[in-house]
Length: 147
Image (cartoon, rainbow, N blue to C red; front, side):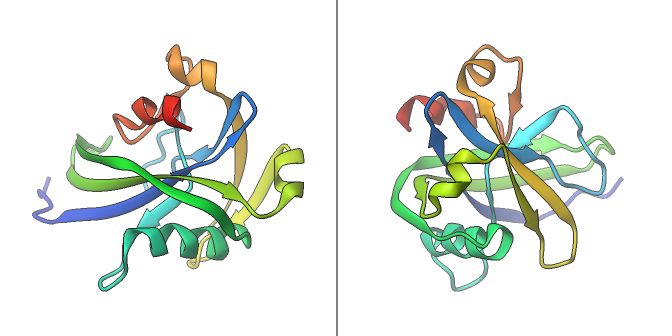
């Protein structure tokens, strides 16, 4: 097991749809099937975190964002299922989707730049709050009350 010696900067955005929030299953080489995360991704060098969430929404979902507002920042240190240590700084935003149709659909089909396909879907905020749905990164659930 080799330790990563790099802090990764990420930016995620929370979208509320009545009593639900938009998420997708965690995508990784070592799939954690029981975890979900909001849309977003890595902040590229020279890119502001607010621009990251706008870019990720366009790239993955093909949807623009409106009413973007930063909620806060969290630090996450964890080991993946293979035991590798990860350290990330995460900017958290609230946003609305510019597509009204996305709020009516149960799933939003998405595609990563590397070709991986996945679906975003709406999950009950209550299930996140009571722990029935594990929202990552750790601490992200504390922002649910702010959206």
